Image 1 (cartoon, protein in one colour):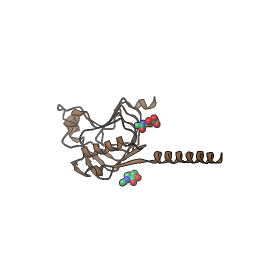
Image 2 (cartoon, protein in one colour):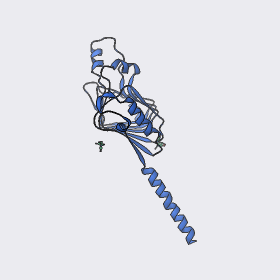
Image 3 (cartoon, helix red, strand yellow):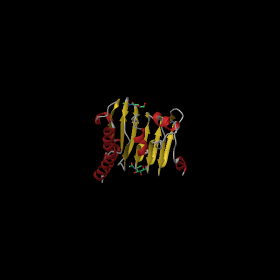
Image 4 (cartoon, helix red, strand yellow):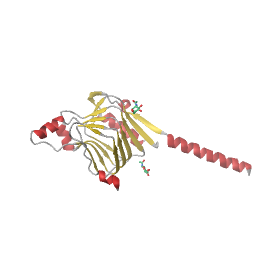
Length: 202
Ligand SMILES: *[C@@H]1O[C@H](CO)[C@@H](O)[C@H](O)[C@H]1NC(C)=O
Ligand SMILES: *[C@@H]1O[C@H](CO)[C@@H](O)[C@H](O)[C@H]1NC(C)=O
């Protein structure tokens, strides 16, 4: 009986240890490791995508993608799911759109798209969509492309965006539930447009 009890207790302890290790395990992915350059000039899109894939396919309970200080040039990009875990994107630097490429971004209607991703947090940082050329085009009433939204969440659930500074840009969402946006600061004049924020209340 005593021996059985000891086996029982030790297997419970064992289970707890396994649970503890699994639940505290998280993957940290640094975009620099994947070749991103914080110089504001080198196209870091592929490095960001590779970092995203590593985080998204990690078997750990959660993944953090760190974007350290610096400026990272990113073209129109789609971060797709579904992922196997919760993902936090910690932006300590600035993500910069190509300055002369607003027509290209306009065509793709987005700059940064998260698609089919659940349980994503985006924390901190700056997005610089370099919207000046676009707004200049609109003001001069030329034939301008529709403005690309900077950051779009499409078919995404449980999204949190915190402390993001969005310069010259818009945020949009479609088919997304539980979008929680707090403490976003906007750049000069253009604001943040959130397609379906009301869904948050459902
Ligand atoms: C997201 O969170 C929900 C609720 O906590 C959970 O059921 C689901 O498995 C999570 N999905 C991922 C990919 O982590
Ligand atoms: C990134 O910023 C967060 C919040 O300010 C801070 O806690 C963290 O240490 C920073 N990480 C790096 C690597 O700079």
